[in-house]
Image 1 (cartoon, helix red, strand yellow):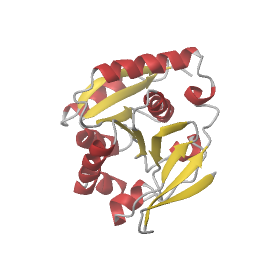
Image 2 (image 1 turned 180 degrees about the vertical axis):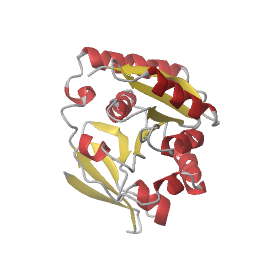
Image 3 (image 1 turned 90 degrees about the vertical axis):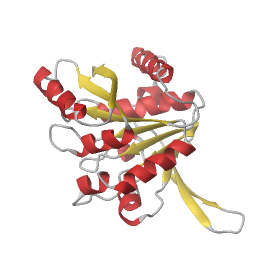
Image 4 (image 1 turned 120 degrees about the horizontal axis):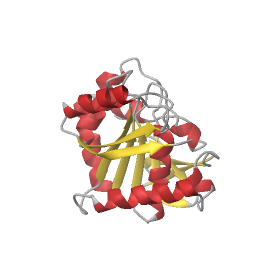
Length: 228
């Protein structure tokens, strides 16, 4: 992993960028001709067609009912898919309970979203060498008050900042059945994509997830059946 520091003309530090290598499980970076990649591209196309505005970023929370349903991998691969079109894309790891994006992208985990929301510290922006329009913000240190941070006005302000700087923003979230974080994030994002796992996700769990999202201002854009 390499880390670069970006400076303004007067020499002040504005942000750090680290360059990571994606894990072998990320098919979009390692096996682009696979059937899975074609499915991700098809999903990408459908989401692009449903985009509300071309002037501001489409912000989508990636949610699932339970752990081990492939939510984080889908978020990572979809982010790469958007970046492959040349779209400025941001992937945010808001799963402060069990963060994985730093592992999937082969980089360190901080400072990240936790430091941004708690202290206002600008996070490290992680990039992949062959995907210059993709940036990743990891979760950062594990906080004891994750839900409070993710329910704060600070997150709303950050999302508005991201809307002005990117074309697509994807937010990875914790499992809905265990924590309320994803509900708060989805309410702030305004749109959600549900990830299920074939032969694993129970209908009652999915129904419970949709019931909780129905109480928010979030629009569910669709569901993905994940097989792995």
